[in-house]
Amino acid sequence: MDKTNADLIITEYMKKIYGFAISKTMNIDHAEELSSRIVFEVYTSLLKSDQIYNVNSYVYRIAQNVYSHFVVDEMSGNFVPFNEAYTLPAATQVTVQQEEDNNREETFSTLRKEISYLSQLHRDIIVMHYFQKMKLAEIANSLNLTSGTVRWHLFEARNQLKDSIEESKERIRAGNQKTFSTIHFYGLLDAHFDLSSYFPDSLFQNIAFSVYHRAKTSSEIAKELSIPLAFVEDTLYYLVENGFVDKQPAGKYLTKIYITEANKEKDKQIHETFKKYSEIVCELYIPLLLSSLSPIPYPLSPNFYFPENDQNFLLWSLITYACAKKLVVVDNQKDLAKHFVKRKYGGNNLLFAEIEENTQQTSDLNSFTKNSILKGSSKTPLEYFFLGITTETFRPSVWWHSSILNDISETFLSDQVSFYRLIQNIRDIILGNLPKDVSNVKIYERLYQEGFLASKTSRKSKSSIEKNVDENTDYFNIVMTTFSDKELTDLLPPIPKKLKKIGKELDDEMFRINKIYYPPHLQDLCRIMNQNTLKYKTFRVYILEALLKRGVLKPLKRKQRKTANMIVFTDVLPK
Image 1 (spheres, rainbow, N blue to C red):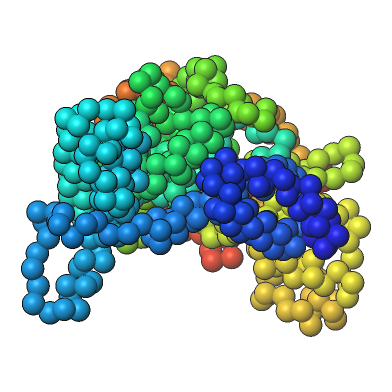
Image 2 (cartoon, rainbow, N blue to C red):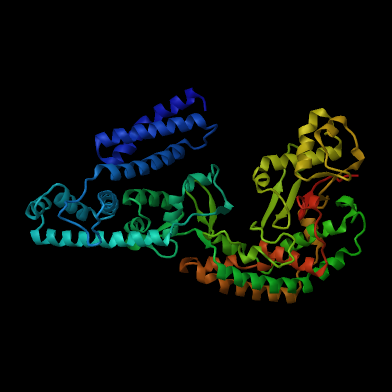
């Protein structure tokens, strides 16, 4: 952003930022310091940003982050140690002066942090007695309480501090901090959707996860995560406002996100279940599919193109596509929609998150058998359906199943605009609108690089493209059809009644395995999420693995793995 626009935004938000700071600190000096930090961070961030769709949200997010660091700084610098007459029972005597100083500083730091988690009354009494050196009678007079009441509160506050410090040590030893490895929505997104604005850092994720399995108060969350109470309350307000956390009776909170935690025992059970049922699919459905495609003519029909007359490559795409489209046991979209959450800015959706185990070991779900052609990969199966962007009436589209059995780049898929453009480039080449000359070198290089174009001799170099040689050796390394998605789906055999019944049994088994890992308020959603397991992205990989072992499918060639399990829906085919 240019400096002029940044100056205008800062001028507009200067008073709002100061108002935010004074509402948080209730102290003029502190507010001036906090607001100056926020202004600095906002201004430097604006200068680095290209375009901002929601300035309010952008400034607020930065202000929250700066405030959280400000609170930590204040806690670490503005408190003084306890009166030396008061020591915790856990304190130990040391003989070396340096070690003693280090231990005392660590204890004081812990005490300062734990004091911030006490109730307002307990904090006041602790500060008056130990910091301001006030006697109990003076404290009682100041707070309009009896001396006995003050003595009781002081006793309770000291016990809470002692217990909290021990709990804090246990939490550190247990390492219970959680962060989301993946986050994704299902449903309608709002116009200015930005996932990073909802969960800007791991702290937001930890607060959401802390109230996932059991409702808790803000104080309980603060103690559990060792976070200042004021920041927990601000974050909870934001999460509740955006529909990710529900406020419960008695000042408690409960997370509405569907969070899946990695678990070796669960994965082992699912692994064995998928192996068993994938064999059943290979016996009951795949023969029906193959009989409808056999013998496979070349081309399959005037509506299909597949490279090098490689029927094995075609089967990889058609089998995976058929499993995704036809192995449907129940239509659960209406039941799923009942759990959608209406977001503040117009979205209506579900939020899913995953938490991986803190280990480098690969899950059984991704290791398969000893004979797997890519054993040990941790790549998560994904499914895509992209609609190309074009100004013409026809919009080419692509269906793609990505798993450990192909080499698609996740970075490439995340750049949807670039992906759409390459699909349009393929169509332009077929129509003769994109000649192979020096002006189009970069386009052709990218098509070769991503595997959409291949050569019967060797991979094209930039110099060979510039010389425009060996054009007759090039071919599109991708399955294409002029059928629509619906037309192709209708041509495939439906799921047999026997397999549909077995599919329901598989769904029940999957729910039985998974339900113990989800909280009571999400049990019904868990049941729905474990329906139609036969068409699961991960389950399809087990089917392919079983077909490889049976010899129905052959391993892909190296150049085929970038575009395997993909079908381009277009209006023109290569000659």
